[in-house]
Image (cartoon, rainbow, N blue to C red):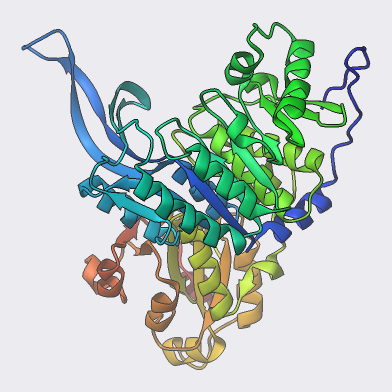
Length: 501
């Protein structure tokens, strides 16, 4: 955090909140209802390798490895809210086309309700296709309708917006200049919000349609367009921010300045300069969406505006270290702040708690890996196996046989350690996100409850079809992976060696 004492304009002092306060705030953000209104897109990524030039023309040939589809534009703001634990709703207009069906499917998979997503035959679903080779964009192909909504569609959308906002804790207007945020839609949304926080991510001028919002969040280029002059230094940015609050009757203007951080100007003349944390820059795509989501959700949870802006600054720093329009979770924010990971006893969960965790992770767009075993004496083979399993996804949940279950499987002399000890030891590993005990002979019921994206077992299994639960996992689109084992490491071998000595 950097502070300026020069005048004019005066910069206020702000002390970074302690990690405990951030943990408390992030917990309070979970479950809040936030409505996003704006221009949504379908982001497509065609990913592959370029190893030769076409003989037909001097252009690279991309050998396609995979295609990915994800929510973009205002929908990426909704996705970012879900990743932070919010209950996000989206109000937008898409085309009645194949891309629109893909869009709805992506929204449904994230738990974003569909009533506010209106389809129109006169529009095409905005699709941005990025051709990517070795994490570098080669070209982007855009297909879109840039036109204001028809009067009938505008009326329908206003009704959906008002109904959604009345039930919400906060509102975000996400403008990508495709025509969804008409003056009527903006006025209806802000009026319906009443005193609830309203965060605006603006695009083209004029911005009078956002009058009465809580926070307007332009980037440096947009702020310069509003001011009508080049913003050469931080004082110029500050003057533009204060002018926004007065002319637009908004409580705060938060100007994002890329690697220079943010500047917050408030209606009363207060100013704060927030520096970005140094980090390797991977991709700025979607950073503004993460900021809008974090600010609105923090305000909905009762944060002061300075706290909300500071938290959003941290979240944006995490995002730019990721490729593509990636989201940021509360745990990643805490990790960025140097918070210690959860204690081992906090990671031992009941079946219901583990199922809730898995559902929340999936809603955040994070893949869940599941494996299971007795883990009687934890050894190097176990550790390497669990690390390799965790590398196949973004969270690892481990099922552990209870003492009674182990006795049925291994005989009267086992286990050597109690279920409580085995679970605690596993939970102490950094690669393990949760541990849950199960008493059945197989983990099938637990697998059905968790619905993992990836199911792993050791490579000593002959085929993937020998793994319990392979069929149910494949039914919901998951996969089974056989993980290589460390040769010569096993609990049985250790028990035999100890008995012999």
